[in-house]
Length: 349
Image (tube, rainbow, N blue to C red; front, side):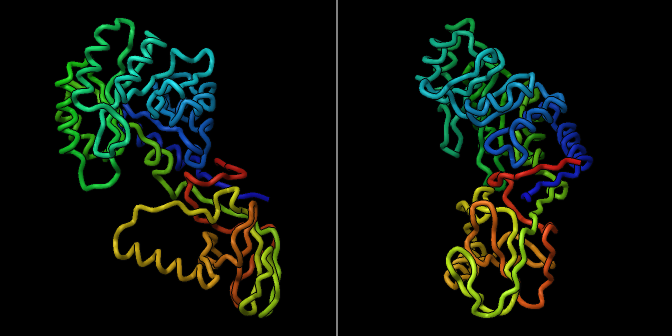
Protein backbone atom coordinates (compact mmCIF):
# COMPACT_ATOMS: atom_id res chain seq x y z
CA UNK A 1 0.00 0.00 0.00
CA UNK A 2 1.29 3.44 -0.84
CA UNK A 3 1.58 7.14 -0.32
CA UNK A 4 0.00 8.46 -3.50
CA UNK A 5 0.02 11.81 -5.26
CA UNK A 6 -3.16 12.28 -7.28
CA UNK A 7 -3.03 14.90 -10.03
CA UNK A 8 -6.13 16.30 -11.73
CA UNK A 9 -4.60 16.15 -15.20
CA UNK A 10 -6.97 18.56 -16.96
CA UNK A 11 -6.65 21.19 -14.27
CA UNK A 12 -2.88 20.74 -14.02
CA UNK A 13 -2.34 21.02 -17.78
CA UNK A 14 -4.62 24.07 -17.99
CA UNK A 15 -2.53 25.82 -15.36
CA UNK A 16 0.69 24.99 -17.23
CA UNK A 17 -0.64 26.29 -20.54
CA UNK A 18 -2.02 29.45 -18.91
CA UNK A 19 1.28 30.19 -17.20
CA UNK A 20 3.23 29.67 -20.42
CA UNK A 21 0.81 31.90 -22.32
CA UNK A 22 1.53 34.71 -19.84
CA UNK A 23 5.29 34.18 -20.17
CA UNK A 24 6.22 32.76 -23.60
CA UNK A 25 9.95 32.93 -22.77
CA UNK A 26 9.49 30.94 -19.55
CA UNK A 27 12.13 28.36 -18.60
CA UNK A 28 10.73 25.49 -16.48
CA UNK A 29 12.92 24.33 -13.60
CA UNK A 30 13.31 20.61 -12.81
CA UNK A 31 15.50 20.01 -9.77
CA UNK A 32 15.71 18.13 -6.49
CA UNK A 33 12.85 15.67 -6.27
CA UNK A 34 11.11 17.32 -9.21
CA UNK A 35 8.68 19.16 -6.92
CA UNK A 36 7.28 15.77 -5.96
CA UNK A 37 6.61 14.77 -9.56
CA UNK A 38 10.14 13.65 -10.47
CA UNK A 39 12.57 15.37 -12.81
CA UNK A 40 12.14 12.86 -15.63
CA UNK A 41 8.40 13.43 -15.68
CA UNK A 42 8.86 17.22 -15.58
CA UNK A 43 11.24 16.95 -18.55
CA UNK A 44 8.59 15.06 -20.51
CA UNK A 45 5.98 17.68 -19.65
CA UNK A 46 8.37 20.48 -20.61
CA UNK A 47 8.87 18.81 -24.00
CA UNK A 48 5.08 18.58 -24.38
CA UNK A 49 4.79 22.29 -23.57
CA UNK A 50 7.20 23.02 -26.41
CA UNK A 51 9.68 25.20 -24.50
CA UNK A 52 13.20 25.45 -25.87
CA UNK A 53 15.10 25.30 -22.57
CA UNK A 54 14.79 23.38 -19.32
CA UNK A 55 16.72 24.37 -16.18
CA UNK A 56 18.13 21.81 -13.76
CA UNK A 57 19.72 22.42 -10.39
CA UNK A 58 22.96 20.48 -10.70
CA UNK A 59 25.09 18.63 -13.23
CA UNK A 60 24.09 15.33 -11.64
CA UNK A 61 20.48 16.03 -12.63
CA UNK A 62 21.26 16.30 -16.35
CA UNK A 63 21.16 12.50 -16.70
CA UNK A 64 17.61 12.49 -15.29
CA UNK A 65 16.22 14.79 -17.99
CA UNK A 66 18.45 14.51 -21.07
CA UNK A 67 16.63 11.56 -22.62
CA UNK A 68 13.20 13.11 -22.03
CA UNK A 69 13.76 16.69 -23.15
CA UNK A 70 15.24 17.47 -26.59
CA UNK A 71 16.16 21.11 -26.08
CA UNK A 72 18.79 23.10 -24.24
CA UNK A 73 19.47 22.40 -20.56
CA UNK A 74 20.60 25.22 -18.29
CA UNK A 75 22.45 24.16 -15.12
CA UNK A 76 21.61 26.63 -12.34
CA UNK A 77 24.50 25.71 -10.03
CA UNK A 78 27.56 27.62 -11.23
CA UNK A 79 30.24 25.64 -13.05
CA UNK A 80 33.23 24.59 -10.99
CA UNK A 81 36.38 22.76 -12.20
CA UNK A 82 35.72 19.98 -9.67
CA UNK A 83 31.99 19.41 -10.33
CA UNK A 84 31.04 19.63 -13.98
CA UNK A 85 30.40 16.12 -15.29
CA UNK A 86 28.21 16.15 -18.39
CA UNK A 87 26.81 12.86 -19.73
CA UNK A 88 28.28 11.86 -23.07
CA UNK A 89 26.71 13.21 -26.22
CA UNK A 90 24.73 16.09 -24.71
CA UNK A 91 27.46 18.72 -24.24
CA UNK A 92 26.18 20.93 -27.12
CA UNK A 93 22.80 21.16 -25.39
CA UNK A 94 24.17 22.19 -21.98
CA UNK A 95 24.30 25.84 -20.90
CA UNK A 96 26.70 26.51 -18.02
CA UNK A 97 26.19 29.16 -15.37
CA UNK A 98 29.40 31.02 -14.48
CA UNK A 99 29.77 33.16 -11.37
CA UNK A 100 33.52 33.61 -10.90
CA UNK A 101 36.22 34.97 -13.19
CA UNK A 102 38.59 32.09 -12.42
CA UNK A 103 35.87 29.62 -13.39
CA UNK A 104 35.21 31.45 -16.65
CA UNK A 105 38.89 31.19 -17.55
CA UNK A 106 39.04 27.51 -16.61
CA UNK A 107 35.82 26.65 -18.46
CA UNK A 108 36.97 28.32 -21.69
CA UNK A 109 40.29 26.48 -21.51
CA UNK A 110 38.41 23.19 -21.05
CA UNK A 111 35.58 23.88 -23.53
CA UNK A 112 36.38 26.85 -25.82
CA UNK A 113 32.96 26.81 -27.48
CA UNK A 114 30.98 26.48 -24.24
CA UNK A 115 27.51 27.92 -23.96
CA UNK A 116 27.43 30.12 -20.88
CA UNK A 117 25.23 32.38 -18.79
CA UNK A 118 27.02 34.84 -16.55
CA UNK A 119 25.42 35.23 -13.12
CA UNK A 120 25.38 38.70 -11.57
CA UNK A 121 25.54 38.66 -7.78
CA UNK A 122 22.35 39.92 -6.11
CA UNK A 123 21.40 40.78 -2.52
CA UNK A 124 21.07 37.04 -1.89
CA UNK A 125 24.90 36.84 -1.81
CA UNK A 126 24.65 33.29 -3.10
CA UNK A 127 26.66 33.19 -6.33
CA UNK A 128 27.69 35.66 -8.97
CA UNK A 129 29.96 38.34 -10.35
CA UNK A 130 30.19 41.94 -9.22
CA UNK A 131 29.61 44.79 -11.65
CA UNK A 132 33.37 44.97 -12.14
CA UNK A 133 33.41 41.20 -12.62
CA UNK A 134 30.87 41.49 -15.45
CA UNK A 135 33.10 44.02 -17.19
CA UNK A 136 36.14 41.79 -16.77
CA UNK A 137 34.16 38.82 -18.09
CA UNK A 138 33.19 40.86 -21.14
CA UNK A 139 36.87 41.45 -21.92
CA UNK A 140 37.71 37.75 -21.52
CA UNK A 141 34.81 36.64 -23.71
CA UNK A 142 35.76 39.18 -26.39
CA UNK A 143 39.08 37.35 -26.70
CA UNK A 144 37.43 33.95 -27.18
CA UNK A 145 35.63 33.93 -30.48
CA UNK A 146 34.06 30.48 -30.09
CA UNK A 147 32.34 30.97 -26.73
CA UNK A 148 28.57 31.38 -26.91
CA UNK A 149 27.21 33.88 -24.38
CA UNK A 150 23.54 33.08 -23.74
CA UNK A 151 22.83 35.96 -21.37
CA UNK A 152 23.12 37.20 -17.79
CA UNK A 153 21.30 35.62 -14.84
CA UNK A 154 19.75 37.39 -11.84
CA UNK A 155 18.70 35.17 -8.94
CA UNK A 156 16.64 37.41 -6.65
CA UNK A 157 15.57 36.64 -3.06
CA UNK A 158 11.97 35.61 -2.45
CA UNK A 159 11.44 37.99 0.48
CA UNK A 160 10.64 41.67 0.16
CA UNK A 161 7.81 43.76 -1.26
CA UNK A 162 9.46 44.55 -4.58
CA UNK A 163 12.71 43.78 -6.39
CA UNK A 164 12.41 46.52 -9.00
CA UNK A 165 14.91 48.91 -7.42
CA UNK A 166 17.54 46.19 -7.20
CA UNK A 167 16.76 44.82 -10.65
CA UNK A 168 17.06 48.28 -12.19
CA UNK A 169 20.51 48.69 -10.66
CA UNK A 170 21.57 45.24 -11.84
CA UNK A 171 20.26 45.84 -15.35
CA UNK A 172 22.30 49.04 -15.51
CA UNK A 173 25.34 46.93 -14.61
CA UNK A 174 24.54 44.52 -17.45
CA UNK A 175 24.31 47.37 -19.95
CA UNK A 176 27.47 49.06 -18.66
CA UNK A 177 29.44 45.81 -18.84
CA UNK A 178 29.59 45.88 -22.63
CA UNK A 179 28.58 42.23 -22.85
CA UNK A 180 27.29 41.22 -26.27
CA UNK A 181 23.92 39.92 -25.11
CA UNK A 182 20.33 41.09 -24.81
CA UNK A 183 19.00 38.17 -22.77
CA UNK A 184 18.48 38.22 -19.01
CA UNK A 185 17.42 35.14 -17.04
CA UNK A 186 15.58 35.96 -13.81
CA UNK A 187 14.25 34.06 -10.81
CA UNK A 188 11.61 34.98 -8.22
CA UNK A 189 10.01 37.97 -9.91
CA UNK A 190 6.24 38.46 -9.82
CA UNK A 191 4.14 38.86 -12.95
CA UNK A 192 3.90 42.59 -12.25
CA UNK A 193 7.66 42.91 -11.82
CA UNK A 194 8.29 40.94 -15.02
CA UNK A 195 5.91 43.19 -16.95
CA UNK A 196 7.57 46.33 -15.59
CA UNK A 197 11.03 44.97 -16.38
CA UNK A 198 10.05 44.09 -19.94
CA UNK A 199 8.50 47.52 -20.43
CA UNK A 200 11.55 49.32 -19.07
CA UNK A 201 14.01 47.30 -21.15
CA UNK A 202 12.16 46.53 -24.41
CA UNK A 203 15.37 45.64 -26.27
CA UNK A 204 16.08 42.80 -23.82
CA UNK A 205 14.51 39.34 -23.73
CA UNK A 206 13.53 38.53 -20.15
CA UNK A 207 13.50 34.78 -19.42
CA UNK A 208 11.83 33.87 -16.10
CA UNK A 209 13.05 30.59 -14.62
CA UNK A 210 10.07 29.11 -12.79
CA UNK A 211 9.72 25.99 -10.67
CA UNK A 212 7.25 26.21 -7.80
CA UNK A 213 4.94 28.68 -9.52
CA UNK A 214 4.69 26.43 -12.57
CA UNK A 215 4.52 22.90 -11.19
CA UNK A 216 2.82 23.70 -7.86
CA UNK A 217 1.05 26.90 -8.81
CA UNK A 218 -2.42 25.32 -8.66
CA UNK A 219 -2.37 23.29 -5.46
CA UNK A 220 -6.02 22.39 -5.98
CA UNK A 221 -4.93 20.11 -8.83
CA UNK A 222 -2.84 18.04 -6.42
CA UNK A 223 -3.98 15.75 -3.61
CA UNK A 224 -1.95 13.38 -1.46
CA UNK A 225 -3.50 10.35 0.19
CA UNK A 226 -2.15 7.56 2.35
CA UNK A 227 -3.51 4.04 2.72
CA UNK A 228 -4.81 2.74 6.04
CA UNK A 229 -2.77 -0.40 6.76
CA UNK A 230 -4.13 -1.49 10.14
CA UNK A 231 -6.58 -0.52 12.88
CA UNK A 232 -6.15 -1.35 16.59
CA UNK A 233 -8.68 -0.33 19.28
CA UNK A 234 -6.91 0.50 22.57
CA UNK A 235 -7.87 1.23 26.16
CA UNK A 236 -6.15 3.63 28.49
CA UNK A 237 -2.74 2.22 29.44
CA UNK A 238 -2.45 -0.30 26.60
CA UNK A 239 1.11 -0.62 25.29
CA UNK A 240 1.87 -0.04 21.60
CA UNK A 241 4.62 0.89 19.16
CA UNK A 242 8.38 0.49 18.88
CA UNK A 243 8.96 2.42 22.06
CA UNK A 244 6.37 0.72 24.24
CA UNK A 245 4.23 3.78 24.78
CA UNK A 246 0.96 3.68 26.72
CA UNK A 247 -2.35 4.82 25.27
CA UNK A 248 -3.32 8.06 27.09
CA UNK A 249 -7.03 7.25 26.90
CA UNK A 250 -9.42 4.97 25.02
CA UNK A 251 -9.22 5.27 21.25
CA UNK A 252 -7.69 3.71 18.16
CA UNK A 253 -4.16 3.25 16.91
CA UNK A 254 -4.21 3.70 13.15
CA UNK A 255 -1.31 2.50 11.02
CA UNK A 256 -1.03 4.41 7.74
CA UNK A 257 1.40 4.43 4.81
CA UNK A 258 4.03 7.14 4.73
CA UNK A 259 7.07 7.57 6.94
CA UNK A 260 10.47 9.17 7.18
CA UNK A 261 11.58 7.52 3.92
CA UNK A 262 8.85 9.54 2.21
CA UNK A 263 9.68 12.74 4.09
CA UNK A 264 6.75 12.42 6.50
CA UNK A 265 7.55 13.87 9.91
CA UNK A 266 10.73 15.58 8.73
CA UNK A 267 10.75 19.34 9.11
CA UNK A 268 13.16 21.82 7.60
CA UNK A 269 13.90 25.26 9.07
CA UNK A 270 11.30 27.88 8.15
CA UNK A 271 11.77 31.51 7.33
CA UNK A 272 9.05 32.65 9.71
CA UNK A 273 10.01 35.68 11.79
CA UNK A 274 6.67 37.16 12.88
CA UNK A 275 5.40 36.92 16.45
CA UNK A 276 2.57 34.62 15.31
CA UNK A 277 4.97 32.26 13.54
CA UNK A 278 7.27 32.15 16.55
CA UNK A 279 4.33 31.43 18.84
CA UNK A 280 3.31 28.53 16.60
CA UNK A 281 6.82 27.12 16.85
CA UNK A 282 6.70 27.35 20.65
CA UNK A 283 3.28 25.65 20.66
CA UNK A 284 4.56 22.78 18.52
CA UNK A 285 7.52 22.40 20.84
CA UNK A 286 5.17 22.19 23.83
CA UNK A 287 3.13 19.46 22.18
CA UNK A 288 6.30 17.55 21.37
CA UNK A 289 7.52 17.77 24.95
CA UNK A 290 4.20 16.39 26.19
CA UNK A 291 4.39 13.47 23.78
CA UNK A 292 1.68 14.71 21.42
CA UNK A 293 2.78 15.80 17.96
CA UNK A 294 0.34 16.85 15.25
CA UNK A 295 0.70 14.77 12.12
CA UNK A 296 0.00 15.86 8.52
CA UNK A 297 -2.76 13.20 8.25
CA UNK A 298 -6.38 14.38 8.33
CA UNK A 299 -9.29 12.17 9.36
CA UNK A 300 -12.83 13.38 9.94
CA UNK A 301 -11.81 16.91 9.00
CA UNK A 302 -9.12 17.15 11.69
CA UNK A 303 -5.37 16.80 11.69
CA UNK A 304 -4.61 13.80 13.90
CA UNK A 305 -1.76 13.24 16.33
CA UNK A 306 1.15 10.90 15.83
CA UNK A 307 0.95 8.08 18.36
CA UNK A 308 4.77 7.94 18.20
CA UNK A 309 7.43 9.30 15.84
CA UNK A 310 6.95 8.11 12.23
CA UNK A 311 8.62 4.88 11.14
CA UNK A 312 10.55 4.53 7.91
CA UNK A 313 7.60 3.62 5.67
CA UNK A 314 4.54 3.84 7.92
CA UNK A 315 3.18 6.03 10.69
CA UNK A 316 1.04 5.33 13.75
CA UNK A 317 -1.73 7.78 14.58
CA UNK A 318 -3.90 8.07 17.69
CA UNK A 319 -7.63 8.62 17.23
CA UNK A 320 -9.53 9.47 20.42
CA UNK A 321 -12.71 7.58 21.28
CA UNK A 322 -15.62 8.89 19.21
CA UNK A 323 -13.52 9.97 16.21
CA UNK A 324 -14.41 8.37 12.85
CA UNK A 325 -12.28 5.29 12.21
CA UNK A 326 -11.49 4.40 8.58
CA UNK A 327 -11.28 0.82 7.37
CA UNK A 328 -8.14 -1.01 6.32
CA UNK A 329 -7.60 -0.17 2.65
CA UNK A 330 -9.25 3.26 2.88
CA UNK A 331 -7.27 6.36 1.98
CA UNK A 332 -6.83 9.43 4.15
CA UNK A 333 -5.66 12.92 3.20
CA UNK A 334 -2.09 13.99 3.91
CA UNK A 335 -0.68 17.50 3.83
CA UNK A 336 2.94 17.45 2.63
CA UNK A 337 5.71 19.69 1.45
CA UNK A 338 5.99 18.55 -2.15
CA UNK A 339 9.65 19.49 -2.55
CA UNK A 340 10.58 17.23 0.37
CA UNK A 341 8.29 14.25 -0.23
CA UNK A 342 8.91 11.02 -2.13
CA UNK A 343 5.71 9.36 -3.33
CA UNK A 344 5.27 5.63 -3.91
CA UNK A 345 2.84 6.31 -6.74
CA UNK A 346 1.82 9.27 -8.90
CA UNK A 347 -1.59 9.07 -10.53
CA UNK A 348 -2.23 11.69 -13.24
CA UNK A 349 -5.74 11.58 -14.65
